[in-house]
Image 1 (cartoon, rainbow, N blue to C red):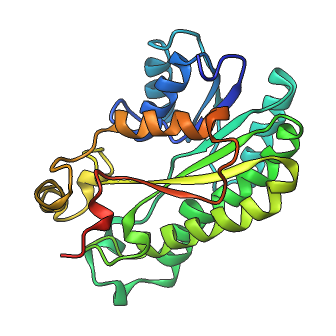
Image 2 (cartoon, rainbow, N blue to C red; image 1 turned 30 degrees about the horizontal axis):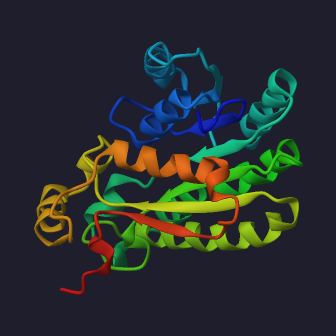
Length: 256
């Protein structure tokens, strides 16, 4: 029970295929007392349905990370109901589909700002509010990235730029929060058949390339990320911060 007695919030659970759900499920199995969030009423039912399968009922709260008032309300509720926080999982990102279908050169100002706000700045926004609840708890903050942050991936476009900003944010936040013994890390996961990913043009071809060229000759599953997340959320990673860990069957180390 790696997370027994630990209180954690997971943002980004949308459906049973999501990486956020895999992390939440594994955290619950390891004894965590969970808080799950939903972006809007349309997604609330999905989160509540999934939560029913967890060994212990989580606290379920609304939070649209693009709305400062909702972010404030989330952490006020966590402080009131739980009294503290041991880990936070930031597993969300967004860009308009039309920004991914075109060349990156055609990215609009509005599309750029939206992708960077929701996919990158939200980590800083959440961390700022979570940190006071994490003092003295040797806490952990974890986010999700992708190799598109450092290499060109067709049709990833502005999301690649957003993930690059996210990874830089991990390092700066790790430096800021290290004196408080709060760790900040990221997992760079390989491509997975999530509903969001399948909306990216040519995504099936990306899966084929990874399976053919990754050293382990297979694609990853959400459970692979969920298991890796346990390392970062638990005391096993007590000396690790500012890190981006690849969970991609080794694809990141291949040149051609």
